[in-house]
Image 1 (tube, rainbow, N blue to C red):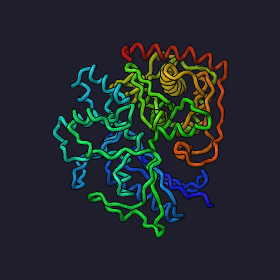
Image 2: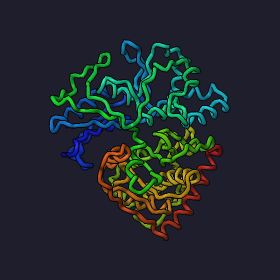
Image 3: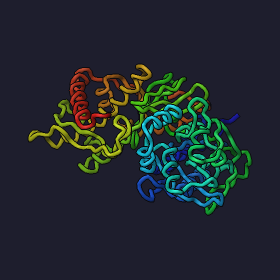
Image 4: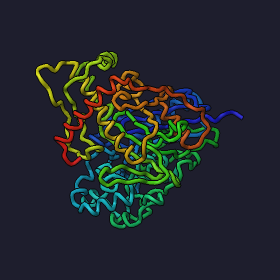
Length: 467
């Protein structure tokens, strides 16, 4: 019996990528981006048009047997019963929700965090909803959606959301994985305003369905009526799925931003640290710390200094370390600071600081911030193997720099876009084991960097005493 042809769809906050896979091997991949209406705002029509386009492109090559969906977390879209969109899609970085934090006592916020496992930050959908309620933008007739259930509705006509994406909304009871009734009552949101929560392997028939003004004209119609759609999981969970061959390592995702995650049988929470713990399935929680800063800092660096990655490699392979320290908070910061107004910049500059020192200090500052989150997660879950996924992991020189600064070996998958395979592995679909490249710290460089890291910590502590 032939292996099923899978069309994997990964919907992020700036683009959608789709891949055809058979027996865990990529046959073809396409992508399509969608510009934001404003910072942290996506036009739902543009997003679904992009999804339709990549599906159509790949379907013209081969007809899939099964769709599998992976989507970004913390998105919010409000719709009225007539299927008119009342808001754009708000992504995690949109500041809506800020006022709700300031209006509530700390004790109430802490209780909510412990009940849901979702950090108290504007990325938390429940806080965005509180702001909308205060503005009078919610009623008992509205529907509350995310990217995942919008997409499922569009492709199947079913209004459902997977457990991982639901848990990240801050509206789910941490121990049951179901909508938190008391929180919904406080918001005045009836249960029917939210989609049904289903397991990540839940599968439905492919049945394109129009939503309001969004037609299905761009989606293919298959003669084979057996095409199905598996709801899948979140992008964070898929990154950890990459490394299931290694047991359950600590995984650093280094894409546009960064996060440090692991999968645990029990939800461990620390109100001071504000780590998340999202229900995936019974005795399976995705735990970790999210940051605003990752590859976006390196993109800023290469643009401002007119650098290619090969030139960046030359700077990072030099043996000398800069005296200058760079705080990488160009986009505000979640963990470790949890301060939206945090700013980046150089410290300890002198007349001897060179152009190359400035460049190198940006990379070391970014990776020092990653190390802070690694150490915090290690304090919760213990020392484990460390895997690295995401676009930045493709650079061997940067991965060597990271392992030198962490002082521990790291594993990087040899397969490009391994997160797509990670979703399949997490869902229990048969895929071949991945192979990994191991990066090992250079002892001499690692020792030098321990001193650099301490100077970085001193600068952070000097400016952000409450982190």
